[in-house]
Length: 285
Image (cartoon, rainbow, N blue to C red):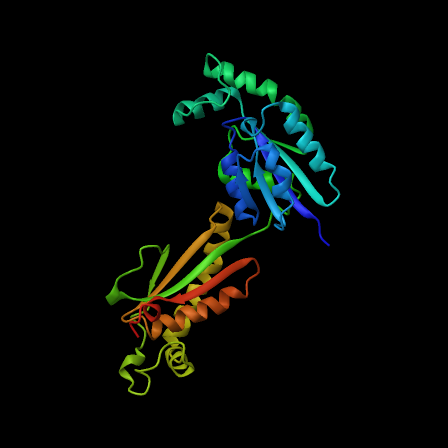
């Protein structure tokens, strides 16, 4: 039986714990923020295999509650526990609080005193951590790479969700697409009597569309473009990419190309690819 993976994200208020939890959620962890210590162990005992918990100075009444919880967790033979302590310089935290205008959880006379007091309280937690990350100058992408390093993951892991969607221009362009390609310049099966009632999901239609040199050439150019773009999107930290393929009615040419793109991209490791045909789902054919 494989061990459960638990990541505790803790540290100073304003150091980026919410951002870190969002990154871990993208990595497949079930995330919960601001979990009180007293329900930490029962929650971890659930059937969920990968859990990331955001726990900070609001999660306990006395620091001993938190440190004892962390010690018990690290001593549990059934889990692999990582405790990540996030910190930032007092100047950066001050600036972040001034920008958000949120109240610091440690209430002292001034914000700076609150930051200093929290740093003192959380010193013992920092000593128990398995990894310390300073987020003073990190963007989300850089924080992602640091988290992967601290957790012992391959920093070259690539993962992106790619949604390929066919549509008909006469029904409007989808509002949520990142890239749109117009295939209305390709030969149209609509004008072939025996193909008109069929769709790009039918082999006869797909074979007809792809029987032309222009179709083959355009498909190759599209795949060359995706081979170039997708690694750069991944490197930039993009997690979702929607590709729209449109023809006149969204039934023949766009469906053919959407299916072919889906099949081609699905062969690439670490790409999560899915396809849908908007006009079919809407009952437009």
